[in-house]
Image (cartoon, rainbow, N blue to C red):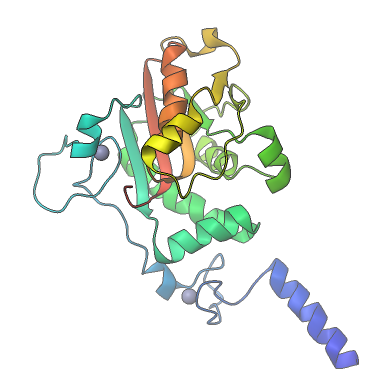
Length: 246
Ligand SMILES: [Zn+2]
Ligand SMILES: [Zn+2]
């Protein structure tokens, strides 16, 4: 009985401060910070140029630096540039899902670190006036108890000393989960989903939208569209990961 109680206490402590890698279960070395071991971190697939300057889609082959992929040339996107740190695969994908849907908050610092690494190298912070998290509908935020985009936007705000505008861009329409929908279906779903609180704040500004993952870009583009309509001069997008193009 006593042993069981002790085990329970240890298990509870491990939940708070896991000392095993949360991806492969191997014990973490003392010097390893966070909850992912060095071997698992090695498997992260970083997005390196050449990649699309707008949607961050990696491109195999040699191209000049200012490159835009075929999808982006066809679409009328409302943001000018997009940066994603890594591919939404393997441990990156798992960490995002566990963080977002299962409240495994200890993945947060890893996600932020990945995003900040790419942001440091590829975002021109001298242009950015405000960091804007992609908002959740209030009902969804209540259910989930937090907005992963706000967490990441706060990390970027601290790292790059930029204001984080929360509540200035709002989600007024709840949309069903988008993961299984095509880009066109997502666009239709997102029409009129976002509004700005005060258009005067955005005039002539450069806003950087932050989210965890860029998949089709439909959500980010719907946000960018509303910001541009309000007079925002330039919209950048920064995400932890880039999913497969649908
Ligand atoms: Zn591991
Ligand atoms: Zn593109």
